[in-house]
Image (cartoon, rainbow, N blue to C red; front, side):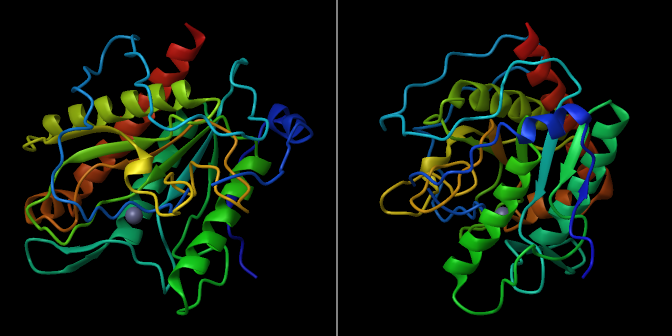
Length: 302
Ligand SMILES: [Zn+2]
């Protein structure tokens, strides 16, 4: 069997394994955000500016906080461990799709992986430990062509288990968006406010969103800020709207650290897709993630 994951763990991270509590808890949904809604500005947070170490107050969520297993320790010295998830993967989980300017097919799983590999390298250069959930085109579970939902849940569980076992400090999930409405375009970052570390997840989302917007603007892209958003907008479990990756779904062992799902551009929009197809864009996005993650830890220490 091939090696499914490349993990670089510090001794400290291994020591933290003993602290893990992998008890299952409550509810949430998919690790993928394929937005099917038309633009909705009502829940969008105002555009952050990428520079200062000042994060707005966490918006109050209408949902009550959920019970949750013990999270990983938030405050400790470095080096910090960043778990990177390249969204989707393998022969049966493509994610969103689009076409470049020459009509070539673009698959979200491939572009997310490319960006994740770039981020992994940049983070290690910057002194972070990393856990790369996949470094190739595969899934951790069988993920056959059968029923999508149980496959998605099982695969997401395997990914979350991996990240928890590594006691990563943060989880950053990289996707590209898709919608039946090809006019939909822009940048959004999802987080879950209803966890014990909701404020930290919000801060991470805020920094990531700000850096991604700045990076895209720097490329001359016509930026559309769709905001830092509650992942309950795109969840799926009737009992808990939050995503499986970031939530506490029934029967699911939830992630134990602050996390975000980044959707920097829409593959289903021609202008965004053309941008995604450019290597320069994916490198800039990876640099933006690195900078957003670094800003988060600087903020945490401040
Ligand atoms: Zn996705």
